[in-house]
Length: 38
Image (cartoon, rainbow, N blue to C red; front, side, top):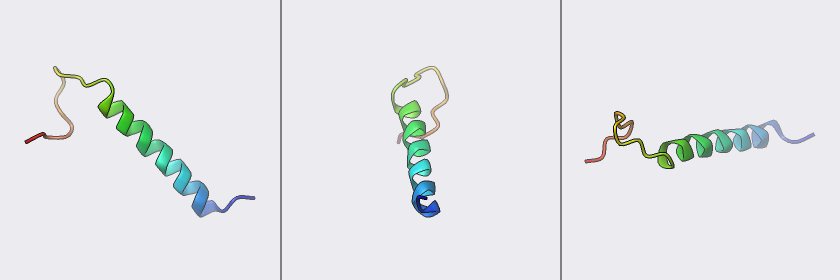
């Protein structure tokens, strides 16, 4: 059995990576920016 902490970290990294990719790749210009670029 794998360590639950390591498994949780792996799942967290996967979710963050997926979310980051979803934010960066499409680049919606006519959509309200989630990250305010100053």
